Figure 1 (cartoon, rainbow, N blue to C red):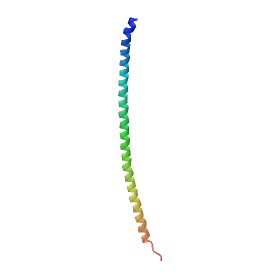
Figure 2: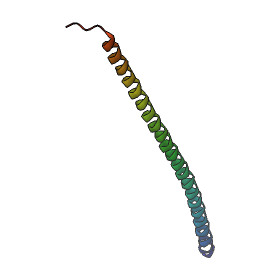
Figure 3: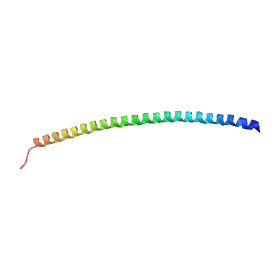
Figure 4: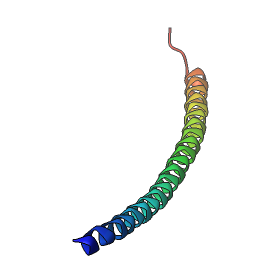
Length: 84
């Protein structure tokens, strides 16, 4: 009976060490996954900003093109003979 009592504290200490080690590993993995998630979010934001800037350029270029086409149409219409 006495040997059982003496072994229990050792087993408890070993279990507590294992729990501590597992928690340390878990925390390390959590930090790694959190860092990776943050990096992916930052990349996504950068990509959205680039797409937004590209979108603005495309809209401006399209507006200039449409305006140019309208000016050409008005000019061509002004060259047509007028009938009254």
